[in-house]
Picture 1 (spheres, rainbow, N blue to C red):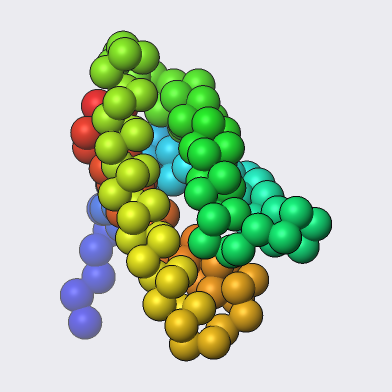
Picture 2: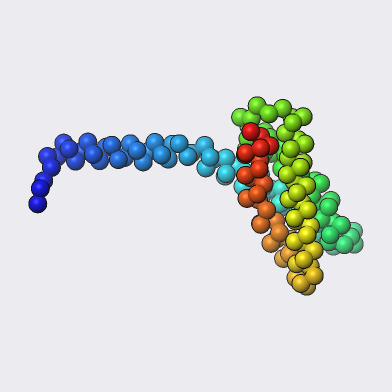
Length: 151
């Protein structure tokens, strides 16, 4: 078996470690952004969910109607959280980003309400239906926010 001198093994090993480190370093900002998006999104979703449950349980609203109020409030949490923290390096002006995110969120909310209605028609408890819906749409929202809203 052919043996390489130890210094060649050290050079090759150091070169591979350097390539791995630079790859991780290259993806770190995106990983950090996804984590921040998740934290803001989870916060907004928790607020959305809580508002719906409170309005159904204590105000007697129908789940689909309560969902509209949950969306309106959680939209504000999401917009300002993403604007100031997730995508804080954006140069997009507020007057451009807000309508863009509103467009993305209206599309997402339309899908949300349609799925929510469908799951309710399947006789799922509204809390379970809402949890399912709130976990499906974040991927769409992240991609649209990164590639269009805050670009």
